[in-house]
Image 1 (cartoon, helix red, strand yellow):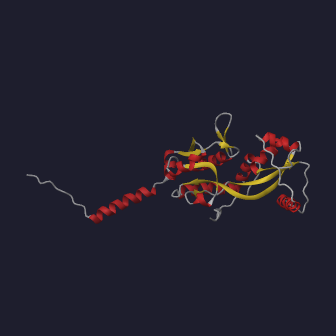
Image 2 (image 1 turned 90 degrees about the horizontal axis):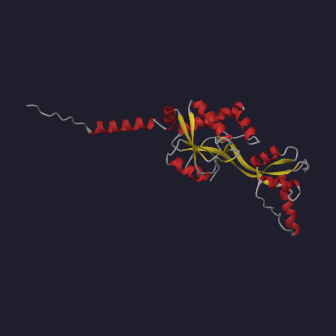
Image 3 (image 1 turned 120 degrees about the vertical axis):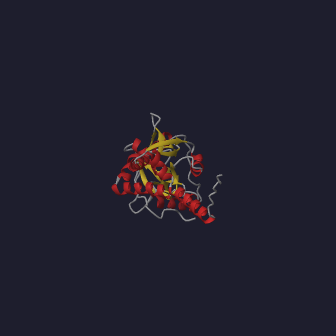
Length: 265
């Protein structure tokens, strides 16, 4: 007659086994998943030219995809883009719906509480666009001119600057060239595109007002993936490739930081 043998496991051994399983699971992360499948799934809203947009062949193009392509090449993987509205990107990232987001994000202290930013790839800052015959005294800057002008208006009790509303960039340029407007105030990357399309007619006067860095984001626990992306961006910065892509896509270049770029609360 056979007796059924029952193997008993001591509680301490069982706890150790469970701990080992959790440890092995924790080792695998998004970067491992990407390399294992040979593909990086990137969410993007391709409606923000020149950073990311859809070209004539319905392909994802722009400054961010150019850098992301270099990151994927460095990792030895391909990219699968998931197109979605910008409002759904951060919730989707935190819900693990894709690996990383590839749309330009302004770096803010509030977002930094929920996300982990890569090192910046650009920045958003406003500037003024003027006619090419507009001259500025060498001892002045556009910001000083505007401040002085506002003080003059206030001292004389005059009305504030009159704003001219238009529906397109072309109408903006037309208003400027026909002298209906004295200057155009917008993001430098937008103005750079206008200068490129109107050579010799208009020029930029430099940065005006506050700025914010632009970066991508990963989930806070994806430290290895974030570092892999950031390291590649830093390498492109050092080699000069990042500046070339900025010039080609944005029309301007920015000296982006490699650390300490999250603004204070």
